[in-house]
Length: 437
Image (cartoon, rainbow, N blue to C red):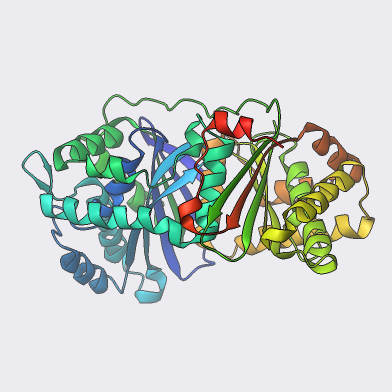
């Protein structure tokens, strides 16, 4: 497990020293909330990666990283529940393999701190050329969502099920919001988040903790002022009736989503019961959706279930022929009902537990996965070790699955049906209610 310490108000350093990896992997997250400034938050890492005060161009950054034995730097934004996190990634060689060079570690950590804390500024804003170029890139990325039909359908499903909730917001924002961003407004947003928002720094590998801590304390010393905790993540209201939303798209197959609300979240003591439920329903080749919808009935190109435990909902997804919509929905709902009635064999349950435990053990061999798991714990306010997780999974019974089924409520059925894009129906929530079947 990570060792966590506060190095400034609202800033936590999470360190895991291990000789397992040949690299030292760092990730720094600046937490924000989804909302009106989502596009600004999404644009910031893109602009920051273009240059810093010391390394003003991408070429200068690349050249410096090459001199650090090919260190790597990248950034993006992550959406976890209703948290919107700027994510900065840095990977460098384990100094043990390059002569135990303490100077290399110092330079590597100083580089990451420099890139995040001291971006290139011109006057009262970010470098105007960088901002305009990255605005174009971000708008292209938003517009290209329609080209990936699964991701497009997923976002439309979120907008239908969570209309009026921050979770419905696309993590890159909207084109209209991007167009309004100025270099000055972007710098103001950067300084505000850097100064007051929660920051979590993860480091995994064989490293000198004192050296890492010192570089971050030095880099953040003059930047933090007036820390403001973010609001707690809220669960949505239970549905009064099931929404059924159907839209058209220029694709041959149809993409189906079903969303179930649940009061169980990652921080709940019963989280692993719901995780096993999700795995049994649609997490593995032996799962009920795969066997009954795809294999036996031949109604789906793919079928799976996934748990969004920070927000608190279970999502089912299948790719089906549009003519098979009613039959596929019927069989999927039947599989859920089978679990809720305890119609689960011991072999199915044990195979699911085995698969989940193997997945957790495999994560321990990937530094990025270890950090992602650590961030989930930070955002949800709960720390669980690998042994805690595997033990909780082993204890799950069929009765526990029945209990989880009673807590789940079907909220939304969304279907993206293959047809020309001219016929796409963008329903409002009131229109959806009028089209209930």
